[in-house]
Length: 401
Ligand SMILES: [Fe+2]
Image 1: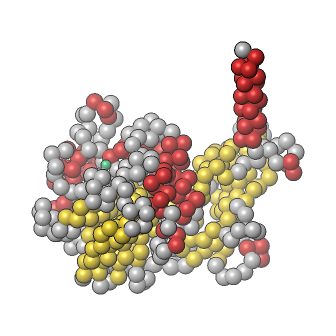
Image 2 (image 1 turned 180 degrees about the vertical axis):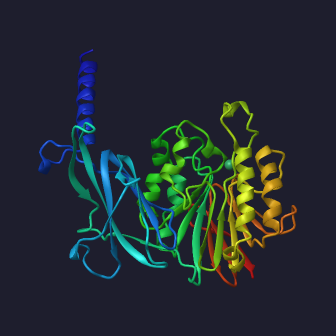
Image 3 (image 1 turned 135 degrees about the vertical axis):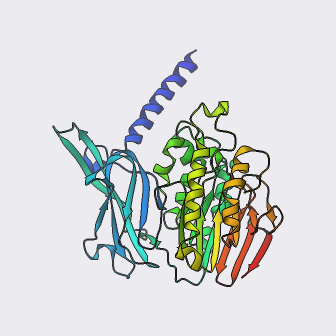
């Protein structure tokens, strides 16, 4: 009984200590709490003239990003321009921060630093007090860098993972090396979680590892799989992963390739009991098909030497409603658009569906949930290399133009 009591006291004391640590009180600021980085940063929505930095803090904060050219000068050489998390002319506070930086040059590397100030007191119109600013370390570590997209680049290299379903261990193994090879960006092609019920599921499932391993410097584009539609926190998906056009589907040119990132919607009919009457995937896919028809008519798309589509669910009618709708709505448009390669996941099994196999006018590469696909594109063709978690090359494909 005595031992049990001692154990309970130790446990309680330990918890209190952990709580004190979690509010992160540095001695230099007295007893005032400071906002520190909880997760991130991770780079999103990179374009030719912009990118967005996202991160979370331990407590509510007001934040900014400082930007410097990659010109060899000390970051402290001069005051750097500040970019804030703001909407409609006012800075936002909270624990999740998105700072969009625009007006940049294409194909250019920039250095950046993130800052946060704790919200010490927020009494509305009466009084708001912010704490001192804490920035990412640029004294002992190099500042983060990010490179904007560039349509004039000769070669594009990117890596894709999918169907991780919260298996952080396999995610780490698959992505730990992407920063050591030429990687313009990483693609998360859906079903990174089975459902999204909380922020911690996203962070613990793969995001913290992504930020640690590459995403503070190498952007990733996240497209939803069917599973990212599920769970109470799934509505927050695009707050963590803002897209280039604030929509679930988007497109951009980089190097010789034009990329169309598509959203697959749910796999079952919207009336399925598990969607509780809240799914309108059919309507979204109809709207998406209209958008797709417009995209493939643009001069920018038609002039691109290589055309790539990223979509979680393959476009083959397999009897499931979602894939049948993708087959009905998207495939005819893409078949007439001169697509060179579609990249998919969903089946958890690798296959390469040759052009003409299932009424598809382009090849479809489906990546395994346990593999990473590395893609290299020049105007003369596409090379794809599929590797397992140990880095062993399992398959290669070449598509010549
Ligand atoms: Fe899926």
